[in-house]
Length: 359
Image 1 (tube, rainbow, N blue to C red):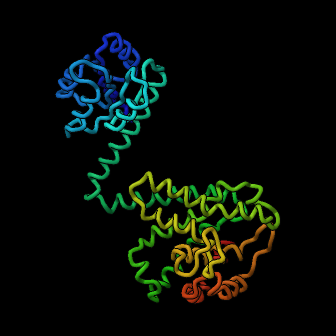
Image 2 (image 1 turned 60 degrees about the vertical axis):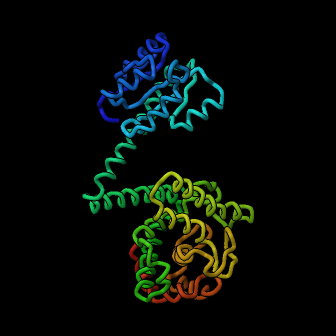
Image 3 (image 1 turned 45 degrees about the horizontal axis):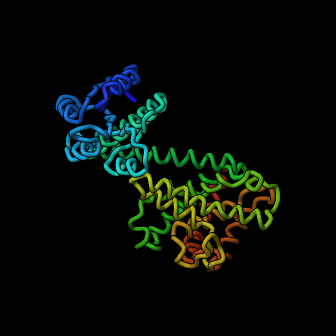
């Protein structure tokens, strides 16, 4: 929050409530008491508060009628309103929230709790206003802001990916290498016109960023399974397989709370499909062929290749030559044959990535 003292309009027809409310709030906020909705609207002609605390049961014009009028006026519709009322039934609370209130506090209330709710809502409102200001200036600063957003997205994704790798310690560098593999595959696909119609509308930079989240679901997998020094039991492997669906659900929750979904869509498809196999024997859904999202089919090659060349508690690393052979032999069973052909063209560069990361 900025250093400016926030203004709160306190509306209640009870003089005792107004006095008590002002006493609670005045140490932190500039408080404007109003004993009726009519006086509230008179005050609004001269000040725009940061938040309104509004009683419901008032003479002449009750709180429900007042908030309807507030939300119908462009000057005041965005002022956050919290109902503070003696009405404690579920129906009243639901009606208040349906009319546009951001919160509903019943009397008698805890002063510290009310202050914390106000603080939280003012912080959210401050962030919302910053976002609006950002959007209003976006057109003239599109290049600069786009770069900032991209860097922020990548930083968030990298941080989350680092958390996954920190827990799954044996796969250090896996995320960075798989991104580089994917970049090679995509560049060759563009050059050869492979799946051109499908990737035409992709933002390739976003797609590469999103690949960092392919194993995000491993955050929910037990350390005992992630770092087991040996082959997993059937039960443990079933648990490990859930990291795909867990990852999808985690990314979907982020999508539901954001407006920009393009890179998250790639991330969700990769997280959910990178263990599917071309012949339908993979998991979690047993998809086959082109029913597997292209993002997942691409990551399958990058992910398996890197797993092969990496050291694990239960195996030694394969040579890049052997890893290349296994990918090629998996064409038509594990992997998309068209993508394996692309892989063959860039396999030497995969080898260089491995050696560059290790040495």
